[in-house]
Image (cartoon, rainbow, N blue to C red; front, side):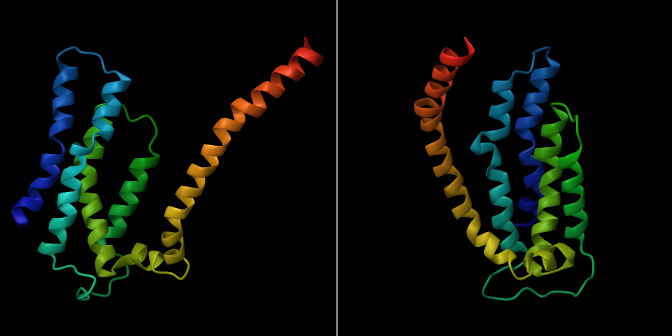
Length: 174
């Protein structure tokens, strides 16, 4: 199982390597292809499998507390800083962005998740503060609320705002 877990980042990068070969052949990158490579669900299966394998390889369970070494700073903290640094770095072009996202990011996420599951490091302590659990529970409700607001905003734009704008423009501006 450990070898399968180690192989997951390499399996994850296969679609990106195909994309690099496509670009090296002289083809031009299109937005549709970029969106396909970035979002096609099958390309994200290695991330899911890696998470499942981590629970087996490292004996992680919500019912059996993980053995935790008290550490002020864990490897997950370093991984978190690297993930944030990559996320805020402007101007990373294709295909390098996909190589980072589907290659380098998986081991970083694995280190971060392992430390979170074992309760090691600053990030783990930050996420276990009072209130952060409430935010986690409310995350889905916030998403639903935004979806409802968007569902109301779109019709109101075309049924109320645009007709009123036309009336105001026709009456007072033109």
